[in-house]
Image (cartoon, rainbow, N blue to C red):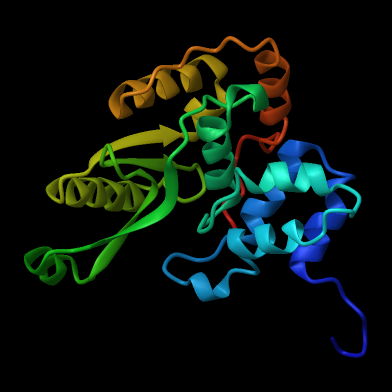
Length: 225
């Protein structure tokens, strides 16, 4: 590229596997597979490409950790805070998450004709979505959801999703950063999707703390892909 030899995103991911913690490697993978809403062609790579490349490199340093990380990477995050919320909710207990797997990023909902005409848009997206339970989780960040105008848009979108038979739960930055509040939120999600959070591994506390170290220190989230 430009006369310089550069590593592909997939090779970079594998090369960094031996240097990064498992949490940072998963976050790296989520961000490499992230893209703006509705524009998957702008993703740097995909879970499928990462898995295919790492699978073909069994003797490479960091291979085992890379293979483990790929299991928890999904396509389509639209921000680093969405990625972190996803990790907290979905990673297994042994990695410090609440084990509520099955969520996908930014599920596209195509609007019915009357809503399409009234709202002037043909689709909207749910930040995290549990398809079997028809549950959407909306992450309400300080950065993009603090003004009355943005809050109004959020409320409208939530009601649009409900009209399409999708229940909506809102996770705020304050809840995500507050350990107890986040735990309460996770247990409510678990109840809704028909799961039970029963943490038995001794690794949870230490791994959960390590996972929380990834949250931006200011608490004023950086909502960029």
